[in-house]
Image 1 (cartoon, rainbow, N blue to C red):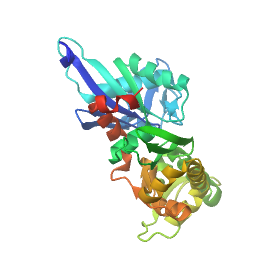
Image 2 (cartoon, helix red, strand yellow):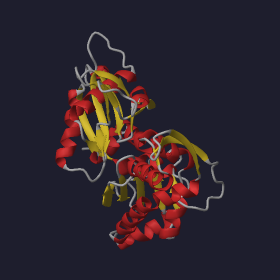
Image 3 (cartoon, rainbow, N blue to C red):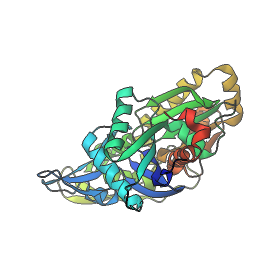
Length: 340
């Protein structure tokens, strides 16, 4: 500990395509949608997070909303930097005479390139970080679920986020094999929008599709405790007049079937690539599901039917990756070889 170590503040960030979560002092202090709203004329940031999400799809020509991350990686460098900067302000780190030096651990998809990694580091540094370290999402998810990743036992993690689905086999503190596919929560929303257009002749926006997914989204058509039908409001494609229709979970399960099948195929590919000794471990330990996409009703059951393996849903799948990043930051000496 140096003389000025009290000036260093440590924060863990799950920089997600859909949501950004920040952990400070072992607590989730920021949990906001990854979106910014800015003025086109001046480039000034008007809102970040929930406030910007409320404007999404409802803006006039001088305001645009930007989701700066796509498929788990930075698509808009300046917007990402502005978003990180504003969200760090929300943490409420008290500024004394000297501004605190920020040390950040940020989690990244396991399939991203070195250039994309560099973009994450640069964005964080531009937003005020003195030191930036990166950890892979499946590893962070495993730590967040409570798995002892340093043990010589194989564990399979599936982390379904907003932009990517990460499938990894972890043992001895390393990722033995991983499959990162760009099919995840955003694709589910697109599937729902498309289904509504084709089957019901109704145009809906991204936010409405997200609400449908949360309220009546399902991976299988025979749920034990099905949700009630959900009223959907949108624009009739024939008349142009707003209208309401009711949708049920089995319709949405049909709409999402194609994307979920791609995730299933990736899981089977990852299992094929797993060394035999680790396969024996996975037969015993099963598959762990994390990420917001894991909350889709019946997904665990569907994966169990496909793989015949036990499938465990994380206790708090939405925050598993963020919590794991926070634990890795707190126990830096123990996990430092996992952090780049």
